[in-house]
Length: 191
Ligand SMILES: Cc1cc2nc3c(=O)[nH]c(=O)nc-3n(C[C@H](O)[C@H](O)[C@H](O)COP(=O)(O)O)c2cc1C
Image (cartoon, rainbow, N blue to C red):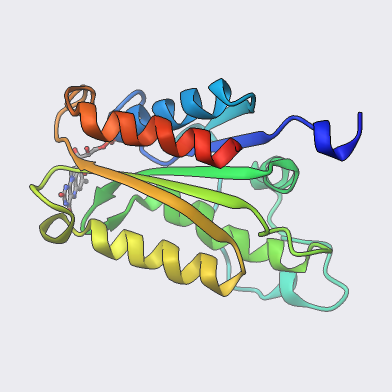
């Protein structure tokens, strides 16, 4: 198979501690859009993985670095992150920013900066849910800003974002407009 016919791989990172919640509902729609455009999708529930916090040892940034020194489930995830063409990052707003689970994962991605040809050259889609009425009052803007700054720093491209207000589990499924936007984003990601 030549590169032009290679199936697009999407890795979905579910950053809520709550399974099948509101941010996951957005991610599911993005995944459905990507699959309808021919992509292969794999989803990872971060909470189920043993991911320790970055120890700030800077070992991963040394010239002879062999990557992150912490031997936990991130080692398996690094390989998947590198292999994927696109990443979908889904997070709820917790205390006016992304969830702790998502931030744990994001901090550990620092180690990718020393893996050969820029491993951050991915298409990225962001999905955010929050309980307050709008992205400003909820603090979703802080998560958005963090993602924008982080991915700009490493040269990754955010293709699009979907976000919406939904407090209880199942609330996001009532927001048809944002679900349609999420599916559209998935198609764009894989296209
Ligand atoms: C610990 C915690 C902190 C939260 N902090 C905020 C917040 O700062 N702003 C907000 O709008 N909603 C906040 N929420 C509500 C969630 O963002 C909202 O319920 C979201 O849709 C949950 O998504 P999930 O189902 O994917 O976990 C918080 C919820 C929890 C459990």
